[in-house]
Length: 409
Image 1 (cartoon, rainbow, N blue to C red):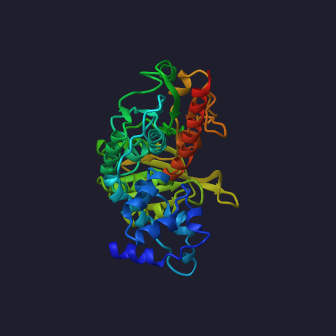
Image 2: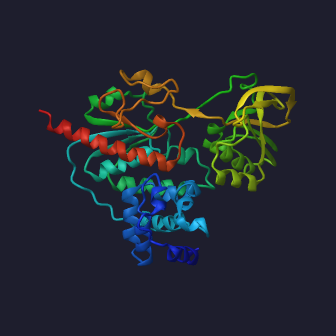
Image 3: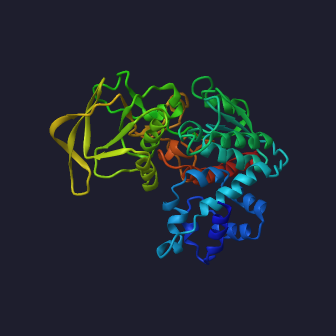
């Protein structure tokens, strides 16, 4: 691997107008990092990566690189693109354990971060590095959010999240696990106890249902719940997955690793919303894809479909034909997720859209003064790097807000 990434680095053209950087939602200074890597300035490169994107190591492993850095590399037009993510992974992996933690003087203001997914951790790191006292409130026992409970271990080893936790603690970021905000405590309690601002990065953990007969049967599960702890489930040898997004791909690949011999994915339309590379990995694992199938009901022995009527763009507009029964030991529904509504229901003036997503302004502030939000809870289920992108903006807005509070008599 070392020789391959060195060769890739040597191929970099150091473009004056790097398309690779434009393709990265986190605006990673890719040519600069590659130049430092070639000069053996590993820790300097790692510091720049971490400062720009605290989730750099995670992104190097789980991003859709062909849609971002590698996919925009100009060399890819006639040859193979530079696989910057491999260089990024090598640098960030080395840097995470060797980084020097600087603790700026405490500036007298505290911020609460609700949720420890990529958005929450990004905000926490940025605020801590600027002298704010930060406490993370996490409902589960371990930090990481979707990185911990939604991305399979074969894609993102959980030891990486454990290493992040050690660095957070060294930054004097405090972590309170097993606290369900909106249940055990409410946001008003945070302001009562002296927090100057609050960030919400709770993600989307409530699975969307189909509203059809059979969803309560014992052999039916929801994809996001299955991924959180697959060892708790017995899926049998044949699994039917309803949906064909990125979560469905992870479900399929995980099912193969927990005893399934055949996994079939079903999509109403003519195309998959999943990224091409995630779909290809699932196909390589043996997953089978069936398009134009609309679920009608689920039985204890498998789902029942009818063929979809598709419009000119491949979107379903109805059903036709006879019902088709597909034998399966387990049916897993993986069509979408939405936020839970505890915080909205327990916080005055905190408003959400019809889909349950928090409403924010151009400064990432919600409809409740002093409460900010970013990531999936605002935009719906996206990627780690998009959560980081929006969290950086939210952190900057929080600091401006708290600075104004300090100046207010």
